[in-house]
Amino acid sequence: MTDTTDLTAVHAATDALHDATQRLVRSVDTMTDDTWRGDSLLPGWTRAHLVAHLTLNAEGLAGSLEGLRQGRGVPMYPSPQARDQDIEELSREEVPRARDRLLASVSRFADAVAAMDDEDWSRQIERVPGGPTFPAAAVPAMRWREVEIHHVDLGVGYDHHDWPVAFAEAAVDSMTTRLADLSPGFRLLLTDLDRECGVGSVAPGAPVVRGSVADAARWLSGRGDGAGMSSEGGDLPQIGAW
Image 1 (cartoon, helix red, strand yellow):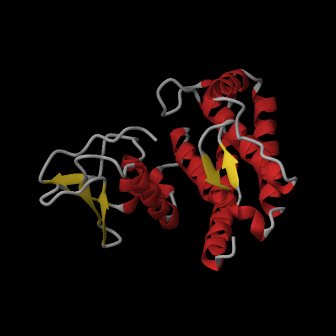
Image 2: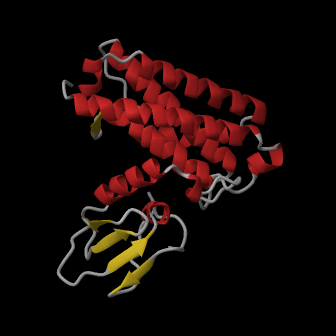
């Protein structure tokens, strides 16, 4: 990668991720054993499942980045089934050990990012062997989304209104890309930023959906019931979970 703008974005996401990770770790540190085993805001997952996922995600991304530095391809996960099984197993681990593993995983991830040379960021990573690839340059922003969105999913007091505006806006952009094939689409007006964008296949006369950038980011990720959002010209669209 030689594009300075791309490298600037990588470093900006890395810095923002550092702060987001510190907030996440502080929240996890306050969780009692009962809180740990309690239900998260994600259907079917306890908070232990979410922490396990965040841990394994950090380990998987770190392993892939380490592999790039060593000149070999290392997929994030051995397979989708192995990923799910590992989350389930780690969710049953004793709380102190699971917490320590989360801390170790975020340290390992930070070290892997810090060790990357500029040219390493242009290389590709496989999610699973033989599966779709993504550029290493996308990793800091990917991890930033994981940390911020799942921090809210823990349901321990950190709310989407606590997201930095920069993250909420980046999440809207990411989710808009995710929903590029949505049909019919709609126009999205971010009322606190005075910004408008199209989501999906936007036809003339498409509904206009309004809301703050934080409310829009949460709704576009498939969370909540659309509180804070309003639609003109049609019902509020149903958005699948990210």
